[in-house]
Length: 371
Image 1 (cartoon, rainbow, N blue to C red):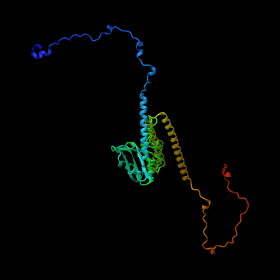
Image 2 (image 1 turned 30 degrees about the vertical axis):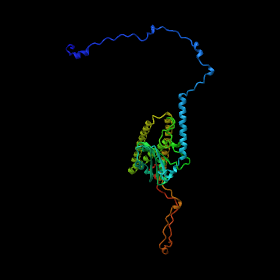
Image 3 (image 1 turned 60 degrees about the horizontal axis):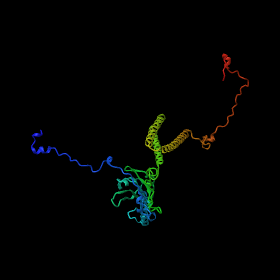
Image 4 (image 1 turned 180 degrees about the horizontal axis):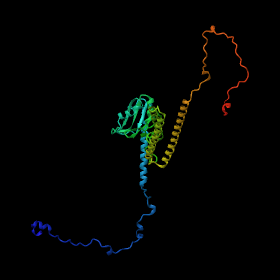
């Protein structure tokens, strides 16, 4: 096929000249002659005398350099903190709330939570006077905490007690009182103070619960109390519907107790699955506390049932009548005392004192009768 190509294309397929031969630049290892090592004794007179040698210069190691830089940064940070602490005065903050004893501190807020959402969540505890959310001065992003001032101090105490650990927009918030203007010598977290424990160190040191303290036991107690109140309400409702027949009431009560036991079993299964990932010691402690709580609840239920039975038996008994409450009916007085009948002078016939022969059934048919 190439013979039919034009000359300009045939020139592209022409063979090149062979590679020219060049001698090697160095000899191969097996062609070289190895020469032994010589001593340095002939060069000793060139060396300097040890007495004239300067001491060696010590070089800083990598660990020492890192430790020196860390120490310098710590000193600079401590100096800046001292200056900021000397200039920090919480009473001169203009945007702050009015009364610090009516102000509630809310932390760990979701960054997407708005002020209106926060107001709706905390208005249930009382009338809110002011909400001051904290934002970053550089980029305007929220810092995740705010201050809420109530009209009355009792409303702030109610929110402090019940709103801790409340979930807002998927995150559980932390609730505390304002300490900057109420606690002497208090410093915020940025100045080395604060009560936060989520960034102390590793996972074994940092706290993992939400809220001020680990109130899992309190929440469990509230759930048990709410469950007991719901059970009592259902029993009262069933008793009101079927008050005419005691048998149906007993059946309804037994059925409600059976349903309650099934519901408690489902709740316990759900709680057990949720806590399965925890450590063995925590599960053992929680199991022991749960048994104690269950025993307490059973004792309470047993005491309530005993009190109910006693009250029911007491109501069924007839009321005791005191002797002084007994009234004897007196005979009415004669309407006409002046017309009373005189005693009649009548002779009474006396029967003879001989024994009479009375009828005896034994003599009639010979049978014995026992009366």
